[in-house]
Length: 114
Image (tube, rainbow, N blue to C red; front, side, top):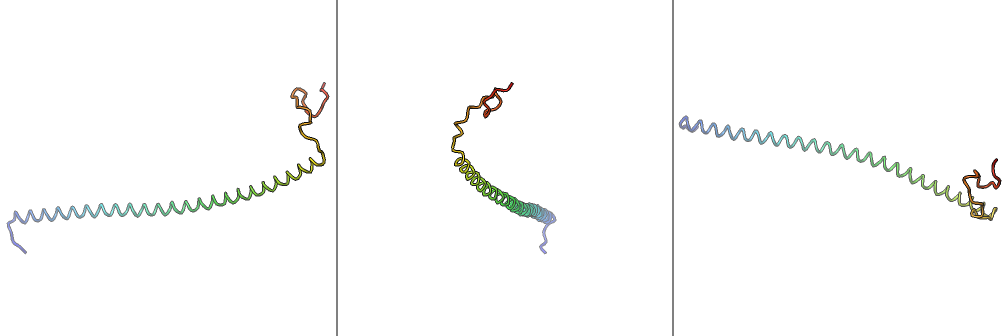
């Protein structure tokens, strides 16, 4: 070991102590940053799982809506066929009916109520 004056040894000790404290602080900061990054990664995995679950729910809703629209199209087609059949059987137009007068209570009845 090198011998030196007690003053130089004290300065060397203080210098080493300062460098060691600085390294410990740096390591502590690095550990905190690493912990935050791990937690963020864990949270992002959790969010990704939640997004996947939401997407599955939305996909079910979209499929249900698509099925409902298909059924509505079938119903619309059937109603159109029924309308055509009624129009062929009764070939008058709806505009030939007497106009509706709210005061008499019934647009299809020509007599006044007493």
